[in-house]
Image (cartoon, rainbow, N blue to C red):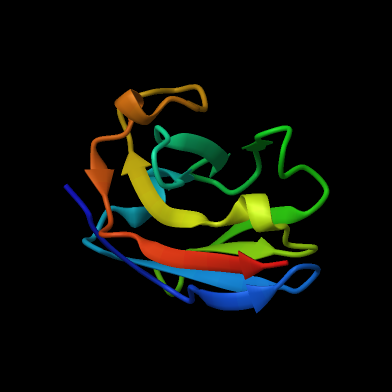
Length: 125
């Protein structure tokens, strides 16, 4: 399994931007599909975005399309989530996830076997 550590969360005003990073340890980072999920207080874990092992394919939740961008840097074993035009409803703990069992992109949290500890994002109105 791969170990994941998120960073980059914080407090931002509505309309602002943040970039989350997820650093992966392990020699097989290039074989993992990577994903971002989030969990707001009192709610379940919600899919945000995912990127294929090659970086050529991505999927986004409708709620973040055209505002968030997922990318990966294989040289740095890192995946990023650039978040623009943030809204108060984006407030949540954001989790990085990884898996390499599937040939197609996955959007369900149950399909990811490795998780980071999460980073808090708070958007004030």
